[in-house]
Every structure is written in C-alpha cells, then in structure tokens.
Length: 74
Image (cartoon, rainbow, N blue to C red; front, side, top):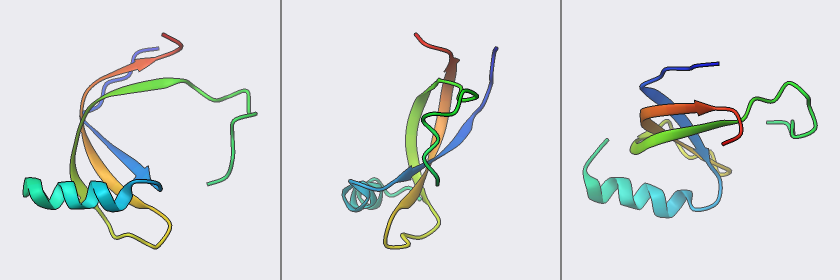
C-alpha cells in the first residue's frame, strides 16, 4: 500500500508543554487498539510545525508537515 500526505496531526500527552514552548520560540504558529488485527503500521517522516487547537489538560495537538509516509513494518 502506498500513501501520500503533506499534513498530519500528532496528539502529544507527555512532553506537550516543552513542545509548546519550542513552538513559541520558533515563531510558528482514544481507546486502546493495540490488540485489533486491522491496525496498519505507519512511519511518518516530517517536521512539527505548529500548535493545532488548545491544550485540554490531557494532551495537545501539533501539526506536522509530512515529507513521506512508509506503510508496513520496516
């Protein structure tokens, strides 16, 4: 399977405050499913570029500019 993307969201729990501060310095602005057979392994190569939404007290979403996506176990 081949996938192409130029944007992704990363939901960060641990380390979100530190990442949020890094974003400021740079000036840019679920349920457990590990036992389900339909999981698809994916590796996303790219750069965290901006904050997406607000910190809800548990996690914070960040945008990723995606360079490439690899599907499957590599």
